[in-house]
Length: 429
Image (cartoon, rainbow, N blue to C red; front, side):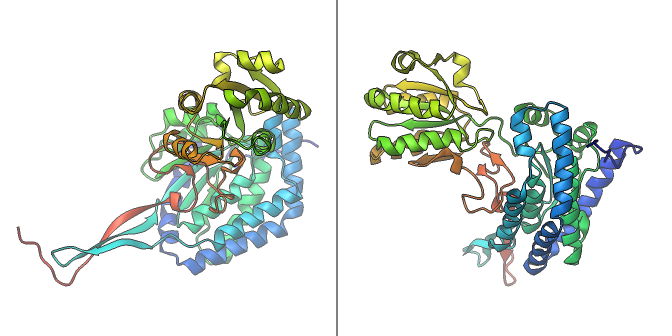
């Protein structure tokens, strides 16, 4: 199978093309912001139907992408993310429909109260406006991002990775067909029709038309966007997630949580990269964990105690900072809760961390003192996901503290403005 060129703007100036896309997105953002819940719901249902009807085209397009990726010797984790099989298409459709079923945040008024002057002051939830989403590999992000932006009343500009261009174009065509079927402006969702990397740089300068940038991909991509963007960015750099087995843990439960946190999927940002074990239970827990991880094909890189107990490879200082995204796990024995929290806050990426313990006081301290976007008790880190959190599809994970944190769903794609109601009141100083 030979790769076909799909660059539809090869003969056009990239800067001019991106400017035109951004201007049309700004105009479309006013249309979608004014659309009612029913119109947005009809569009989402039509998008799901269009994707379902395009299964054959999606399979063919994804096969082209996979062939090109394998020919280019792209890393296996990226190829794993690129594949879109029948189950993946089902999940993509389910994600669109789940977003449709969620409560509409737009227009909701909260905190309405009377002031001594007689006026009423509250806050209304409103769309952000135009969202630029730059992502790699996973073609399902095209449908997820478009659905979330549409439901939350935003226009979006999508720039998927060149390795997924054929799949992304088919999905985006389905999205635009669904939007048009609902009588809305198809420019609400636009996918860059070029793989030219210069288009990313041009997009990051469109602060007159684009309100926020959301990158999804590797550290290199996110660092570039953070450094170059003139537009606010919602992002996370790394997913250095921890499982801490406290001395008060049910060790059978802890073993299952640790193994699942690492192995359910390797190439995801919510996979555990470091296992911390309380010294009080290390003698019993370490050999059991080492055996399970060996069976799963996971290489352990351990502290001195871990090396002595189970013969792991030695862990370097860099390993505590590492996001392996594969079958490698750093393991450290710690002397209690204080040391575990200190390790996580020093080496972690403020993404997701979990404690396994039946000790209420310990779990409360862990929840309070671990400074991460998602902090968990007695559950796998791989649940740090918008779908699992009930947000529908997520547009990304944020480890920033402004404006959204953790999995970013509908509410994270809106902001609030003050609204004031009166009955002829005038201010007298």
